[in-house]
View 1: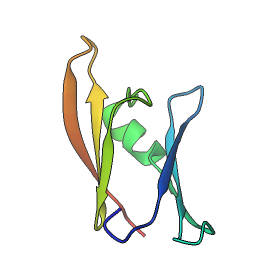
View 2 (view 1 turned 45 degrees about the vertical axis):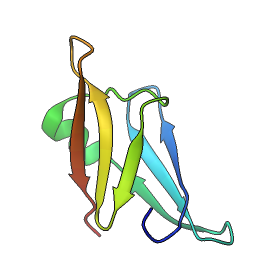
View 3 (view 1 turned 180 degrees about the horizontal axis):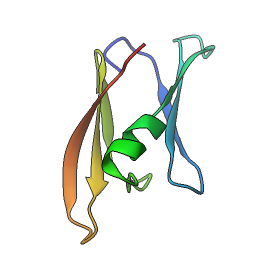
View 4 (view 1 turned 120 degrees about the vertical axis):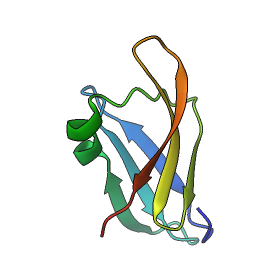
Amino acid sequence: DDQGRPWIRRTNAQGVVTFDVYDRAGKPVATVDLSAAITEVGEIRSPAFLPFVVRKENVYMVVLDDDDVQHVVRYQIVR
C-alpha cells in the first residue's frame, strides 16, 4: 500500500476475497474482508493473477464480469 505495508490476498471457495495486512517488520496488523461487497454486487470474480492496488482507504481491483470482461472497481475500507 502507500504506507509500505504488504497486503496478502486470499480467496476462499465461496469467492470471498480477504486481505491480510502486515507492517514493515512482517507483523500482522489487520485483515480486510470484502464479504460485504459480495452482498452488494454479487460474487467478486478476481483471480489471483489479476492486480490490485491499495491507496489510502481504497482497494482497487480488476474483476471479471459474467462474460469475462475485465473491469476496475474500487472498494472503500470502512474501519
